[in-house]
Image 1 (spheres, one colour):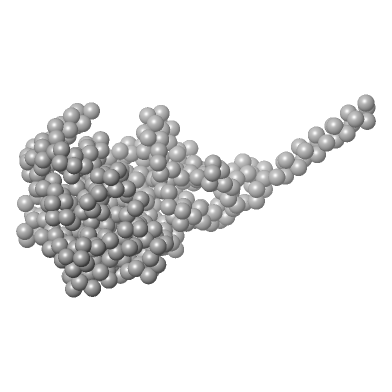
Image 2: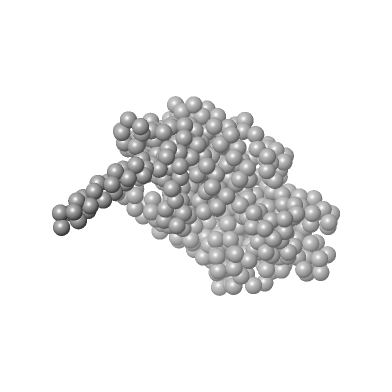
Length: 436
């Protein structure tokens, strides 16, 4: 019995010794939760002092982009062995998760503001104006993440510059110049449909995932109401806007349907079928972000895809882009590790890391003088002087209106709502949600 007890005690001591030596080497990456979370540089530094662990949450799902984030974080922890990073990715429940965290005033040290740095998260964010990268924010994104007092709310890794993706070879095949006005866009669509024998239609929308319909309405709201000289921006912000002035936006969507320029099965079509339809040359234009291109190229690797600005909807106006934050990193003002968090942002802001994220996502970098080399780089260079306006809903609509926009657009296409009723509903819902 004494021998057995001795061996049990010896085994227990060995387990304690070996478990104490099993810490992962500095700079490694440990996957958890099915690969959605990663902690880099975990454990203790050589002196026995516990590392500083930064919590970091990012609102992305694209595998190539999550890989790039992990590589950058791994590089940071190798250079800074006294800091580890608990990196989490969430694309489905991110917004609700962050609302809960804001309510509890318990936010990650670093997080993605996903388009709402100032309006939604502003009071929770540290001022980053004195960071070395702050003066390098691009002219098109600076005002989006900076207030009138000079506070900088976030590092913009990539900014949105959204217009329409299109099949370059198809426009060349049918001798069509890139449309500069909405009328030219409709004419181009009619020509493509006719000369393709009905094989190709300009647009594909999904009533199952009505965000595609909301995207159309949101992106073309700016060319109708904001980008021209006689714009309605002040009236929208002051609450004096005449909502009958948005009726032409609803009518434009209905016109595309009536002319057969949208897929006939719009109410039952799935968003997930769009890449295959585009790859098969059944669709010409797509109101989606650049990440869409990867899905198309999996099917049609050699298809040439370009990006064009949104055509003007008001006579005398010029094409524009819809833009704002795409991938960002901000710092919680009450973080216990402000210096370390800012240090990580400085590492992300290195030109080589900014270029990596831009090349992977095919979005423009949020800092100046970053050299990129991806499929859309020539188009961003070509349209460098085109004006960029923030997404309509992020500036002029109260929280909750995105769902209304999507739902009303679907009702319009289903014939259950007229353009005039669309406008009345928008007015009613804006007034209701503005009181919340």
